[in-house]
Every structure is written in structure tokens, then in C-alpha cells.
Length: 183
Image 1 (tube, one colour):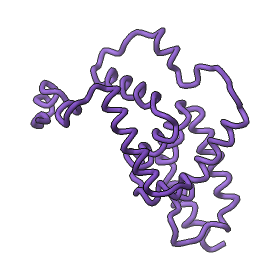
Image 2 (cartoon, rainbow, N blue to C red; image 1 turned 180 degrees about the horizontal axis):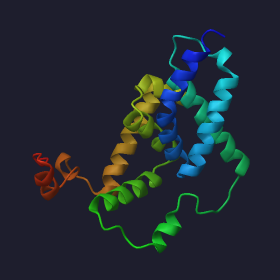
Image 3 (cartoon, rainbow, N blue to C red; image 1 turned 180 degrees about the vertical axis):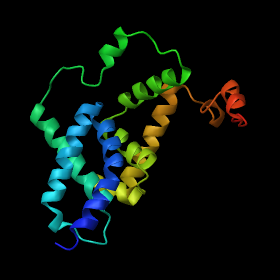
Image 4 (cartoon, rainbow, N blue to C red; image 1 turned 30 degrees about the vertical axis):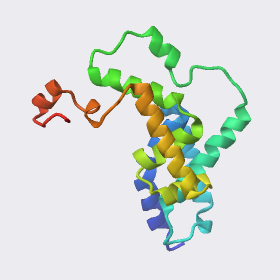
């Protein structure tokens, strides 16, 4: 296998992206790590089926996504606090405003339907093009665009964002880090 070292190097380089996507799907870094490990094992085992010159990142994200949904089907309906929402309610509130904003963002993301959340993460956080996201999700490009649009609109509604100037650092934080606040 002359391509094995290149395949291994590329695989390792994509692990942080896989982990972020897995965490967003599963809501837990422990489950995300298990998903990534399973994805890497499957990819390594099936590397002979990968077409060199094609998008390895999209191939791996597809494997990860399929593994996640396979695990979800196997688990059925289970009531647990895997994402820590109940535990967060028992804990004290964070002192930093950024932590509060992040909690609000996570709650808003949790309110999105799974297909919209997945599309928004693939496009907005993982940097995939609409075409690549459509390939990963096995749907039309227009479907991905629609899901992302509806997800963004829903997030803005839930977070109470009415304009571009309502997110990002506030005026005090902007002064501290030396940037002009959003208008």
C-alpha cells in the first residue's frame, strides 16, 4: 500500500473537524470521541474504496454521519442527560458573558430540527460548500440551502436577533480588545 502514509496523514489532519461535527451531532464530547474513533476504524478498513483525488473530508463526514444515525436507530428512545442540559440547570451560572451567550446559542441549536441543525453545522461551522453538504446528506443542493436558511431564521428568532449589530462583542468588550463594535 504505497498510499497508506498519505492516507494516514490526511486522516489525522481531519480529526479535529470530525470531532467538532461529531460533538455537534451527539451533544457530548465523550460520544463524539467514540463516533470519531468508529469513523476512523471504518475509514481505515475501507480505505481501498476511497477514490484518491476526491474529497476525503466529505467521505469521512459521510461515514461519521451514517454511524451516528445507525447508533441512534439502535438506541431507540432513551431518556438520559447525555448532553448535560439537566446537569447545567443544577450548576451555577457562568460568570463570563461569553459563556452565557454560548449556552443561549447551544439551546437555540437544540431547538432546531435535526436536518436543519446538521445543514447549518456543515455549512456554517465545518466550511463545506452547499454541494458538498448535499452530497454528505444525500439530498438536493436546494434542500440544503432551504434547511440552512430556515435554520438561520429560526436561530435569529430564538436568540432575538433583529439586525447584524446584535451579535459579536458588545461595545465594552470591543474597546478592551481594540475593535470597533458592530453597527
